[in-house]
Length: 578
Image (cartoon, rainbow, N blue to C red; front, side, top):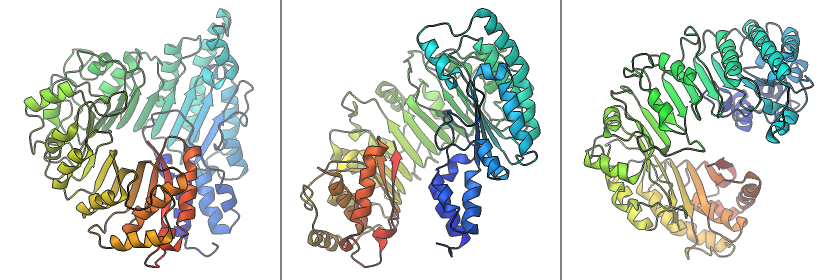
């Protein structure tokens, strides 16, 4: 351990923390970025380990201010307070700064005082911070939140007026502290207040304006929070935005919509949450003269799933092509573009299309020629899904639809189909025409191990596959697999047509115990010598962690290493959310 090359140490520590989540990005939640406490023991191995681990530990720093105005109480587990990072001398590593506070603590000066004191202690050493997350919410004060939920007035009217006055005065001062300490901010994540009795629209607009004002070079903006209201913003704010995520649910106000529209010529990525088509329509019509809005540089448009979504009969119908250069189109809930025009407009450029649509609209699009063969010449990934019934099975049997979907593009590399279906064989058959696939997600169909081997062998270039496993008589799947059975099965399937598969992801398994599930997952993985990792889709991390333990135990059996090269011992096992 103390003589490993630096790049190996960096890879180990990077894998432990999941480094990608600390890069500037559009975040869609306000959960604090965390750093595992398990990194601290790594610092004691030797100076090189300390150097690498300390750089990760200090990458994300938080100030969590509760009603007592402290920096070290009640902040979420696995987050590193700025005070602790300063004490460890790691503040020069900070890249992501997080501030969680209540409106009251802003108003009474506590936030300005705590932030100012800490920034003074590390003056000149926070210049590499590129992302700032600010959450101003009564939810950070448990007592007030519970009073609100019980319908009790938390503050009298005179005190409300005093808090609002103090907030408007101090939020700008806090912004100035950020400007001086962190002059290179390029990404801002803001989650506003919507539960207190204060004038939320004024407070949120003032706060977001203050933080945008101190980041003249901002490129990424995420505005979070259901029912969070905003008024109009100064037209000079955020002139160079390239990436935006906004929540337009429940009448968030025209301020956010106008901020998006104003940056239409600059945006490269736009993610929008909404519960009705009304705010969505406003994104495609200029508020001043109702002229069409064109996002001339936008390459990615995403509409994430939103709880409380409401079906609207009218939907959204832009009058001109809003996406002339769109490459990625993702709609997690039923697509609100109800005309063929939008799909026709994006045909020449789109490379990734993940869309959930109603069957009625699909039939209309087919009739209009939208999904004719070869109509998406550059499409490389497709995930087209329809409604599912209460049992999770697709209402529309896609057996007759998949051939059309698979013929959309001559360069198709990735196909995803997660929905359960009644007749699996009718769905799988059309896939065989796409032998150049590199990624295949087909979690809605359960395979025996032998059938899964046959499926993978059909695609010689397949690098990643997601599927579900079920029992059969291929091996002793109703009990533990003996060493002799493993050896016999591996010999029977020793000749494979795929040498590119790197990742095997299992969606569901149907076995009586987790150890038996692990044995059969590893048995499938042992067939393909190129596999480097096994992922298990999980809805309950604590419960499914037992599968990882069972996999670690199973890979110690020599029978799974039939060629003696130690491949099972080198495989990485992990849980992934779905």
